[in-house]
Image (cartoon, rainbow, N blue to C red; front, side):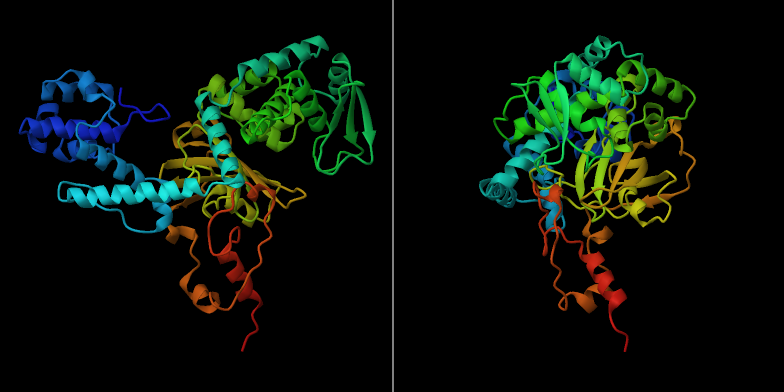
Length: 483
């Protein structure tokens, strides 16, 4: 079957196969359109890979072309030229080409074969050079991108981790509902660990486990976390899951995700959280805030946990974002088709988020107590999102959960009138400063970046990596002396 790497229908190859078969039978767009009851323009959209057709329509096309359906769905392009056209089209729709800020080339019969070959070779060489220059940051980018693919493939739901949580809660006779600090300590005791709170825990650690003596060391006062249970549960999770010293960065990321997931599954048990969410959906009042309050967890924990359960148990695709107040993406997850900003390697960490998105707009609001809801029109569709701002030692972050427009009917806040439109990755949307500001300040300023930890894995390429130029210019404009 003609599919892409993530399992979807490869519309570019499919379109080329249909065009090849149509022209081989001396049929025009009008001829094929008449045979399947569609306008010629719709056939053209199909052949250019701009639309993913239903199987019933493909069956009609196959019948009109007098070929079996399997012939349309073969994975390889029909000719060498078609393969080059597909490769160029795919490249022009990717993040690398978008970052160049040049107009795409029309890929049609009028494009000479040698020019087509040259463009494809040039694109491949640019991609090769990017990969060749890879070092530790690029390794982190690839590992993050691969992890997101895995999470998306299973809707961010890990049944084996849910079972671990269920067994631990059963072992301490947890009655359901919020997990108290006493119950958290009971889990540690059940596993044979004593808890020791110390003032001199290494600054680079959240906890230290002494496996030889059955001790878990934690910081006095739990600095750097809004929930005293979290560091302990993550330490317990790593022990339960048998984590060893990571073999590479990808292994480190996997362990971190698993530990965080199991900790959240203990604080918001599947057996209690799912019925709570199902009832809320039935009453069309789903809310991350309500989930947070019902299980007495931080908002970010509730938002993460919602992504674990929403698709598997509620049938709702979802995305999650954590964005620094400087505008860069710290971490994110999606299985609802939203397009996060990404570098040529597919990594999203450290990339600038559109100013029009809910995750950025929420920073401009004086009211940080009331939930903020917004609809955003993007290149991949319209999404509804709810967002909150939370402080941290690295500055403020927004935590956002969103869904496609078709699923907003299940949520509180769907009646909001707040709406924005995003044209990113078009630089004219929000990444280029307004012309008047740029004219005044582009050659009269020199900002010094203060990158936070989320940028260590991936600094976006720019004049000043990690710096929001528009914000710098606006600051200078506000503070410039008047004549």
